[in-house]
Image 1 (cartoon, helix red, strand yellow):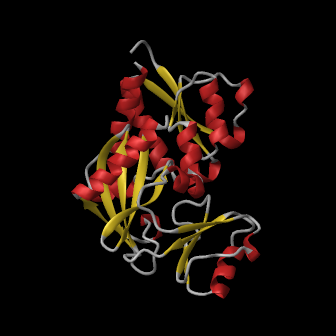
Image 2: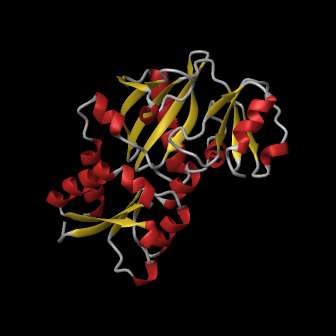
Image 3: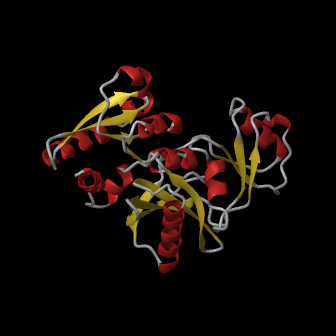
Length: 276
């Protein structure tokens, strides 16, 4: 590697405030291998006036911003295409057509009177939410309308309830390779996210889980959107893994909780290798 490469770690302010340790860990791991990484907040970024970096690690969810860097010839991890696909659950569902998924209905932004064609009980969630935000189980029309009213005219998804609701698998992916799996189990209800109190355990993938994860990875690669650092999430229905979501801005706290895998270190090392 010729000289120090400069990078921006791109965050929205709110996400940065709760992920400072992640950012600091990236910066700590980067410097010894020739990468100088600066945290840049989207709210203060003036793209046209900035001395642009050699690369960007995007931890924000605006694909158009990532695309602007790419158009300037700057590599972005994850790419703008991954960002666009993964940060709208409708896009993800369409992109993974043909994979096993729970039956899903899209509800537009004028959803208070939108019809739904799936039987109760249903899972309802905002199309652009993340981290288990406002995911709820509804058992009748009044509960559904109350849940949708909480979305402030956001588009939403209605989804068939998985038979093993409250249990899901996060598969960590680095540059197209499976790193580890973490099983998440809700202590109550259906939301199993670690930061919302779910129990977590390191999980060795079964042949079926590994095959499904690899197929998802291939779909992204074949469509020009390779996964740099992402999480593939499976639900379980009738004992079988089914696709749920793909996390672009994937968290790593629970992986550090259950293993000695330093996934941030592995991530930075591979970025440095690709920039050399």
